[in-house]
Image 1 (cartoon, rainbow, N blue to C red):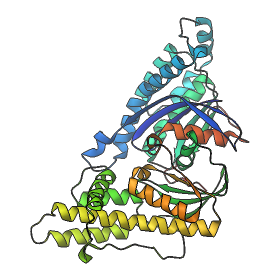
Image 2: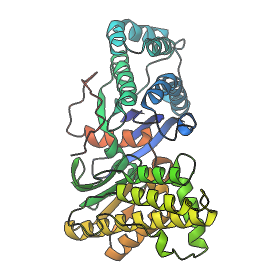
Image 3: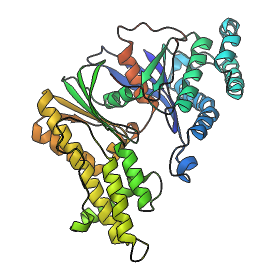
Image 4: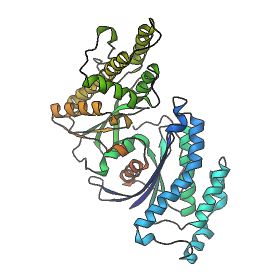
Length: 400
């Protein structure tokens, strides 16, 4: 099965085509094409993602990325080496069957996008793709709608079934590209800018959220503390650099820089990072009083203490969940796993509890369409897939 997936949940516009084989217990995936545009530079000066700007950038970039993706796909597949002129009869048959009024209605709020898509479809052959997939949530709803409506338009134009996919299931499936996680039950720890969740998975397509953040997600807390330290956006990598410097120098954190570990000993599996952020705010304000600025050494100490605190909370909750749920495997997904310290501490937890732990490669840790395609392959088993299904953008869509 060949799957074309679209991801526009936040500030990356991404498309990918995968070849998927095998049953749901042992799927195999090959990436045939992939294209991605990051909006970090657009949002950097504002210190965060602006939904309206993200939506506009998705609409501008999605057709060029589709063109790039399909060009790569066709060049890799001899059966697809064709253009409209090489088989004009087949291309004309496809075009004559297209309901342009329906597509125009789908994209009625994006007339420029409709015009670009119409031109593209008329000048390119229908690809040899069996299934379309698109992220329907969670995420920024204006951004999600661009991908959803674009995918629905393609579904109508090419008469290819379309499947909506939960972005968080994509992060879980992201580990499957290079490895097979077959030892259930599985615990998934999802840590990103918008989410911090623990998911119990007795089998694929069966997800129960056993813990989540009650306020800020871990990535969000990183960004907010980074702003307190006058670091650039995105703040996670900047905080980690300072923390690594302090860790390598083996500095001792003075008592005056100690930060809390919220909900470390709570009886549930929930997280809270807002308290650490607030404590960091008061700490920075107090340390700035004499000169109005923080020294480089103070910034490194705060970064180290912050990263140590949030990692201790993650490890404590994960350990407790492993014991209570009898877990055999751990999946860790989301952009924050690019943090080498957090990754190494989670590996220690897995070794201590004698369970396997899986991480996606670096390219699949952040938002991407490859993971959406893999999640779609899992979802299509025993699921009726249809052309142009009704799909709603759900900013707070939950896995369970």
